[in-house]
Image 1 (cartoon, one colour):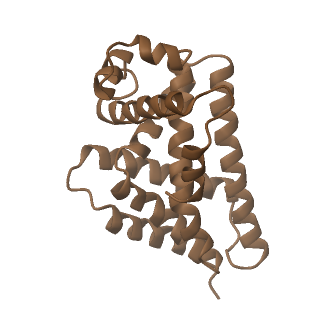
Image 2: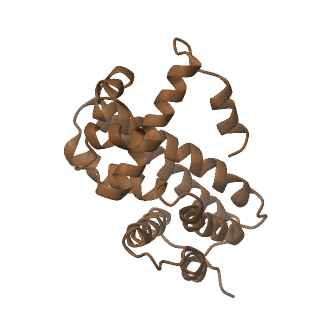
Length: 214
């Protein structure tokens, strides 16, 4: 998955051995599979332990303080994978419209490369506000706010440069993210879902929505 993922595998965080990091990664991978398949509410430690081939749920409890802690790492892992996959494709484009297309298309293309990752993250994020309290909920909310703010700023920059027409940048970003998330949910339920075709169609819709016309 590129330099970022490779570095994570080579350097264990302070206080953890490489074996412990490998075990944590194994648990997170199993959690992603279980969440995508059964949903957030049914992603119990028992199911995750069985998917990971662990002898008991105690192994999960040893490595993670609780479900909130594990969910934080699930979201972080999906975001690492998504960033490593999408960033080079977006940054390879030289125009605002090209970067928008690449962002949308690579989001959907990620479903083909990692079919469980985005559905798992959507499940977690759609449930966390109502189920998690305190610090975990704040962390999730702050991370999403930061990502959304960066996207809004990018759209406003394109507007100032004259690449995009005038519209409310926040509304447009929310619409783009909502449309992508809706297709991710659809993909999880439709075995015949064609991510490449849907990605191109969605990119075309928002290219037309943002394009500055003479």
